[in-house]
Length: 248
Image (cartoon, rainbow, N blue to C red; front, side, top):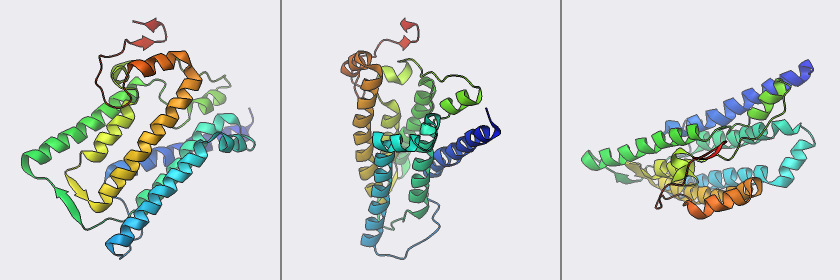
């Protein structure tokens, strides 16, 4: 492996971590770190925030499509595919967070016991998200696995189909937890409501799109799982544990 190849590998690792993970951290922090504050009317603020949301959805839709990834592979090696996706999506999300405009119109401000209950649901969503991420192994949202394998001059192997923990109850526990974190908010302004509605809709659409990819990857095994386990809301008995050795 040449020094240039190693440098490119490490560059994509840094970019994926900085923008992919960093943008999510900015979003989770809560209050957006605005670099520009527009003294606009409520209507213009909501129109601008709608534009930012659509900008992210469009970017995400384009970069996830097969034709875009094929063009990227004409320029960069295929093992950079996941990191490029994480980086470009992270840049788009960073733009949304930095330029999002806050509304001054309050729709909800819970106090006392109701606030405590809603905040508890929010913390529970965060805890279950972390638990769900730890159960999905190998969990590689930044696409670093293929790059690390390339640095070791090894062939990257996709992980087996594993079902355990919250994945026994719903097929997409991470998305379900994100929805809980969106809506379990004791303070709601009009821009927050706009964000929740638009991004919740996008997550549901993304869930259906991801299901198609999972069916292509795992075939009948995933179809059986799909029939037996709800998508986002747990209402059935838990699915049997599946690990790389089979069903326990």
